Image (cartoon, rainbow, N blue to C red):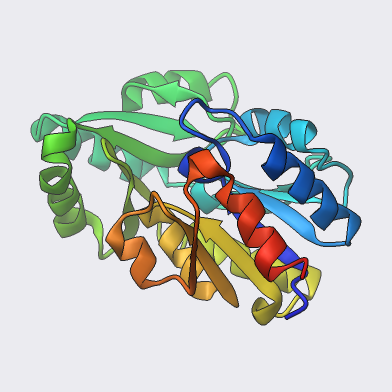
Length: 253
């Protein structure tokens, strides 16, 4: 298949356990870019966090894009936004109250990636920058309690929001119909690329929507079983340049 877009997760996929990008991953991404393939970083990070990684990889220019904050924002590298979705402030207040009542540690994350420990703190900041919006809630617990937190969040919020485990200690809450998968779908439509010509590479539950929607889905070997279950292929783990292997094997052959 002639793949035209490759969506790549960052933490646990592109990055090794030391938060570094291997030489092999860099070299292969360069080859993909030279072949005219769009390599799209897809992450829970904001623009400021992703642009440094894009620069390191040589991804640049107005015809390259990034999926930010887990799918809330899609923009090109010149900061032209093609999609943005945020939570309503009234909803944020209710969610804040529920999480506090249940003694859940959490932070609100705005569209610039800033963190707030309460709805009140967020509203005070928003008075100074009214263009900001809340992208998501980031809730925290210990590894041993992650399933308990996930169950609580799913039971309370699945009807009206998108809830997903994003790390062994975090569960995130997004607006309805916001996910990496929906973002990949929106970007592909914007670029007039058939989803069959999209490859996605990931490792966690929040990558599952984009793995399901892509024409070729690839899991790195450090992924949990539920990620393997929705993936077409498995490549070496994030410490052994799995992204490079995936691109070489499936996109550059």
